[in-house]
Image (tube, rainbow, N blue to C red; front, side, top):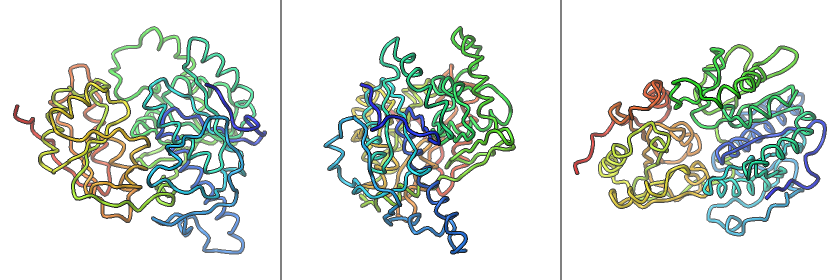
Amino acid sequence: MRSAGAGGVRGSGETLAFVESPVQLLNVLEWAYADSRRTAAADRTGSDPAGQPGSDPAAQPGTAAAGRHGRTRHDENEDDPALRHAPGRPQPQPARSAHDGTLTVVVLSPNDPMTRGQLRRMAELARDEGFAVRWEDARGGAAAPFQTIGALTPALRRARRIVIGDPFSRYVQLLLTLTGARDLIVVDDGTATMEFVSQLARGERLVRWHRTGRGRGPRDAVFAPVSALARRRLTPREGRRTVEVFSSMPVEPPDGVSVTANDFAWTRARFGPPSLTRGSDLVGTSLAETGVVDLDRYIDAVRSLARAHGATRYFAHRRESTEKLKRLSEETGLEIVRPDLPLELIARRGPIGRTILSFPSTVVHTLPLALAGTEVKVAVCDIDPAWLTDTASPRAQGFLSGVTGTARDVQRLPSVPAAAP
């Protein structure tokens, strides 16, 4: 189904945000919220010297924020009644749309049902904030990519700012070659942001960290010129193009690239604080699905970690397979929870365990920020090199160790031994 915000994609000064996952859309909302606070602070500078972004009460945990512009538009997608009455759902509040209300979120929907479901719920939250949402079934058949690109090209060429969530996406890279926008913003797509910034700084081609790197296939070779052009688009040029990274990850940007910290102020302002349960919760990963970690080793590690820390629930990653989750339930006794929103929002609205256990993943960086001011502790368990598959990328162990080692405000746990059969 294809639909657009009322009036379609608008205005010559528009900001377009392209997202393919729920976390990307969450971080677009965080960026828009932070951007509106920066703009408001700049507006106050002449009369209020204390009006700095950090002094905005909306940034404090547990406080509601009200922006300048109310919600005025819906897209043509049907509203989700289940979400409208979901526990912990914030009441719609006025919110200042970034760049004077000209932000349009374009959802390049994947085919995975779990991801689509979370994206629809995140899209409703975006509409509650006053933003237009344009849903594109970008992978809905052989002709869909051509139809999507054709429909978006005029807006891409008009847009002044482009916000993207996944610079490794071939779809996004292709769209970047069609825009002359002066400002490009990359928001977090999880820990992949760390690898993106490193590759950009080194001038390397953009390759996901878990790819084996054993040569490029025919598709990679054909797409190489597009990828190279997209990388040039993501390189700042003084006086012609700015590049900003909006991230909660520890990144060292190359010269000319600015970094804005994502402290999850929007999440904290709109949700919580959460009620806490007595037990611990465990966060799942898709490391087995991506071929990095052996499935049997992973299940053994989950079982050992749950027993050692009294975990009762397992929050599944949206990419974890049904077969794997069924096996986890049977062999560990954990209650499997498939969240309908990104975990940062689920944890913030609660109920959530007093300790959240995780393997190296994005959440060891984001949850301490989203849960700031609460009593929840986040603990991360290292990945034992013995768990890695023979086909795992040579960079996998170093990357995962870096994810753990750079996390702040977390408890570090040693890798757990395999559970006894």
